[in-house]
Image (tube, rainbow, N blue to C red; front, side):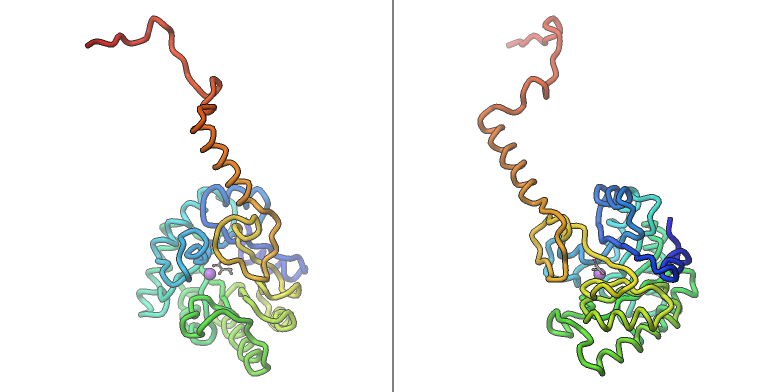
Length: 275
Ligand code: KIV
Ligand code: NA
């Protein structure tokens, strides 16, 4: 299993880090087989598998539930779990308890929090308590209501400099890595150079120390919106629809189940019908 140390080493060696967002047992099994460095149980599960419009409705309990299933499928992979909307903005006691629950009840290896300087103290308290923390800057979907939508972040110098400042604050507060979402590729490159800790990009170009994408997005599974920065490596939905349609037709026309899917018993064991 990767550790915060070996991940830092990968950055030193200029070895790209690959992370995959996944939410359940079968996808986690495949992620581990494929050799993902990290699995992220992302709160994007709200849109991708729970059918919400945003990540806002996702709860700590749901994150724990999904992380448990991922952990069972990928016992030897470093698993990061998103702390969901407003689960780390109240009292520090509540924040620490939510992180404790995620770590203890689900077996996560680390947590991920969205935000920069404003949550630096929280990141410090968590790492001081023994909770490895991954940061998340740029497009931060939990703030979509405040921001008024999804867009590329850091395109203007002032915003770009603020982002680097935030990233440095997270590093100083003990974060072991940072996700940079939906920023110009030049900015991700500069951030990766400016930081000792790995920068994992999504919609952030090739210059980051690593990449993350969502399982369902790359295999083409689901009916949620798929952003421009995703590369689809497969198209599984039509395959599934085909199987479902065939199954339906075969049940309707009586070709399923066939003999090979059926059990038989000896003639003399057949129950007698009375009445
Ligand atoms: O929830 C998620 O999947 C994420 C990644 C896209 C970074 O936060
Ligand atoms: Na997320």
